[in-house]
Amino acid sequence: MKHLPVAGKAITLLFTALFLVACSGSDTKESEEAAAAAAAAAAAASAAEAEASAAATAEQTRLREAAMAVGNVFYFEFDSSTLTMDAQRSLDAHIAALQGSDATVRLEGHTDERGTRDYNMALGERRANSVRDYMVVNGIASYRIETVSYGEEKPVAYGSGESNWAQNRRVELK
Amino acid sequence: MKRLSKVFVATVLLIAALGVRAELVIEITQGVDNPTAIAVVPFGWSGTGTPPEDISAVINSDLNRSGQFEPVDRRDMLGFPRTEDEIFYRDWRALSTEYLLIGRVSATEQMRIEYELFDVTRQVQVAQGVEEGPINEARMLAHRVSDAVYQKLTGIPGAFATRLLYVSVTRVPNGRDYFRLTLADSDGARPIVLLESREPVLAPAWSPDGSEIAYVSFETSRPAIYRQNLVTGAREQLTNFKGLNSSPSWSPDGNTMAMVLSKDGSPDIYLMDMASKRLTRATRHYAIDTEPTWMPDGKSLLFTSDRGGRPQIYRYNLQAGSVERVTFDGNYNARARVAQDGRNVVMVTQRSGEFHIALHDLVTDRVTVLTSTQLDESPSIAPNGSMVLYATKQGDRGILAAVSVDGGVKFRLPAREGDVREPAWSPYMSR
Image (cartoon, rainbow over all chains, first blue to last red; front, side):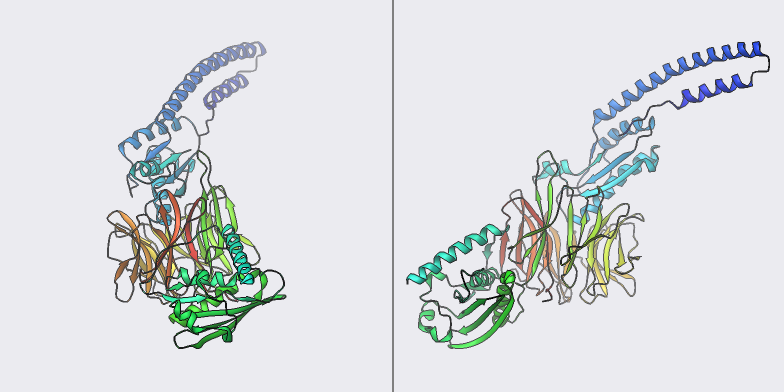
């Protein structure tokens, strides 16, 4: 995930202050006073904004850490692309973190080794799309999400048997 | 006798050299019940120096691998006749030999192989012929002799003078694996790496004349379909769509490529005109449609779809644009490949949780499960329709294996290293 700072609001306020300065009458003294007042206001505003932005950053960091804590891999049942409750809870943490940023994500869909390779390629895409759809429904713009399926080509566990297969049926958020 | 022992040494050395060269090893696990006993006598050599290839060893190994023959061991032979007048039939009858293949090899600029096949019981010549070609194609010339002998004795054209494509993977724990697309002779010899990548390579497919291949590569971090000319080496990226770009399959006339794209939503079958690169959408369904393969007449395609809930084989008629379901037996039938007769379809079928290779007869709708291992996939049928090459697992390793369409002959081709998968048997090569 790529995180961009939340500086938009502070910049907007600063511009408002400057606009007030520019429009505040013809008298030089008055305008100087007004300018001073405006500058003070702007300083106060930017201080408040810095505080708010620091709080927002802290909140964003907290959300990001929460998202990292739940991990970036979501697991699926055999031949299924339905999100499990576990996967939904983990995704909610990522969605909360993404809502405060405009980062883009890549969702990589994977399957276990059972079944044919090209069918699994399609199944992996279905899994990635199912994660994407859940994120879009929950307010993440679809243009921020790229999906790609690797089918069964990139296992994390090489062996056979359910314990390995379960680790491979997954979508990775990157 | 002294000269003979020298031949033996040369033979052993040559076999050892061949072994090192081949990446795949062949282990025959099951042959037919009454194989034909044939003696492939070491061919006479009349060139300078040592022969560049042990021609008769190549033929011997071909016939043995087919499971239809039981070759006589060279060490049991009482003599190495080169011409008809050197044959003592009594010696060969004593070894229960039914047929005897002798020959002579010469090489100047070209290699020339003359061969003669004799019926030991009737003491008559039943076939003879000559193969000529470049010296560096010596093995291919030997495979052509095998093809002729096989056809004479079984009535079916041989498929030894053909080639294989396969994907091998070298695992890198906690790293990115190495994927290699390899071209080899039908016996696994002379492997050539066509593409090496740290990203997945899959779905190799042949053009109908065997001069080009197509495959899917993730080298750009997304899947794309490529074509590559085996003669010139020229490579072209055919697709780069959002979503799936998979399962390239060349039409029998070479003019169209069927493929799977999901650019318009769900995975569907598309047809690309190879001259204009124009795309036509063939299927249109919210389910998964994938793994298209052409019927030999080019009028319809078989493909896998889960539109009925589970993956099954369907048939798409190009002219009518209609779709009909083909398989009903079992709850998972996928990735069909059709024999040149347009009748035998090999596919992956799931039975009691295991994945096997099965044969579906399109005329009788009879399904025969051919394999008994549990993770069998990617069946590819020989151009003569006799054998099916497929991928399976031995322990934790991916290997190639083969089974005859009647299930009677089986052999394995484990690789010396890495996992091997997705075999694609070439069509007959134009000379």
